[in-house]
Image 1 (cartoon, helix red, strand yellow):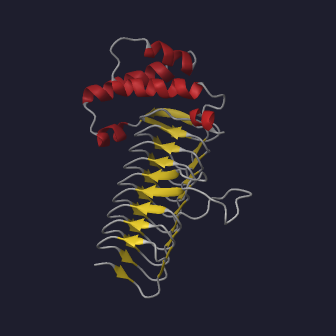
Image 2 (cartoon, rainbow, N blue to C red; image 1 turned 90 degrees about the vertical axis):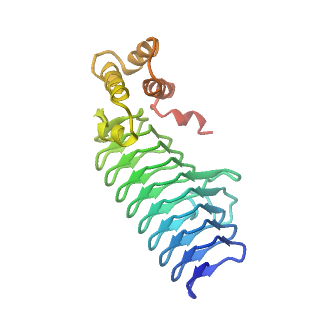
Length: 268
């Protein structure tokens, strides 16, 4: 059974699956789909063209699918949508914006935790098992891989890619791509500090896989020479595993763009 508080305002075209709970003063716009068992606490606003999966929990005062913060974008402009997966925990005052491009979507995966005050800009891709701590701010067009963990108040420049199972320390300002499995801190530019060994354990990597990643990190960042040169040398080695290959390819892709942000290639 769907439970809707009498004070909620729900568009007639919204689709609510079995077990959905809508709290006081919520507003749900047109062409919204909410999957089974999802709960919205008080004062949650869901904009147009938002598709939400099963078992999600939205705490009070979230704005999900509101108009992107783009100069010159009027409220009647045609824009894209937002797709959110399953079993996400989205805490108070989180904002997630849809794509600015008609027919395209901002994408959030499953099993993520977004803490208080997190902002996710338009046209981002957030994969699975991501933790964004209080007041993390993600600019538009960013991609965050599976298992990434950002500590409080991390800032991400637009078009940045952060590889899976990375960790960023509190108040990091990240303005270029980060290869998988690494720890970064500081800002403009941030610095790679080491391998996210705790993340590797959470990911279930074997001891052999972890050792290969650590050795690759040392060859990339600790043996002198430029990062891109080291990556190309490592890429030419025989028998590197898929995780090392992912690190190397991320470095090479980032080097193709002058600011170290691979996705900038697709800006226009």
